[in-house]
Length: 198
Image 1: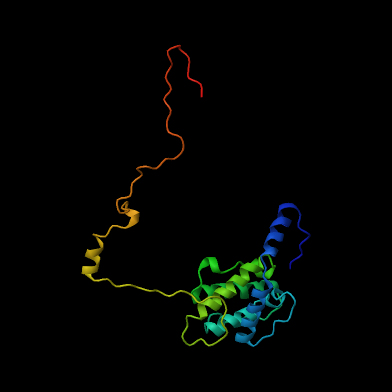
Image 2 (image 1 turned 180 degrees about the vertical axis):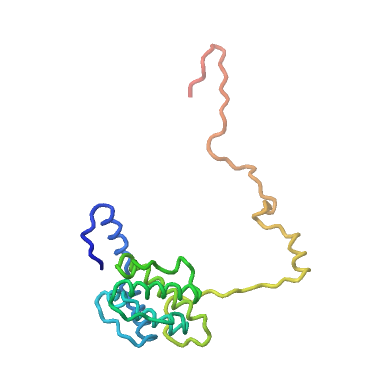
């Protein structure tokens, strides 16, 4: 992490909430996924410490999407490490990940939001399963594929005459005989001019 002091107040509550979202089991599966595809060992207790320079994750995206990051910076200078992370994020988008599936540079570099980073790795694993030549470890659920349906003109025409229950037809059902509480009371004055007592 950068030179940051202890967080207080709202910042401390937000940091605690984000830290509470960390799942060691998911992080361990992400670690195994990264190690298998890159051949690099991720040994730190907090795996983001080994990954924050961006070298290993750039190798990961290059294993899935060759040429995704053409030049990996190996310098220990922070801005070069941040460039690696930025290049990884752009390569993930080019590989097919959506904007909401990737993370911000500081989420990993400064460990601001590690759960967002692990979500990105799981999304990479899910996206990799769509590639028929992929034979690596499975990470995350299989991504849904399109199930396009073709209907003939006769089927489409027949569908115009079917009334679903959502269209107001329930086989003649009505509200007749239903009583929702007490009926409306009409009270009139009695002969003596007083209201009747109940």
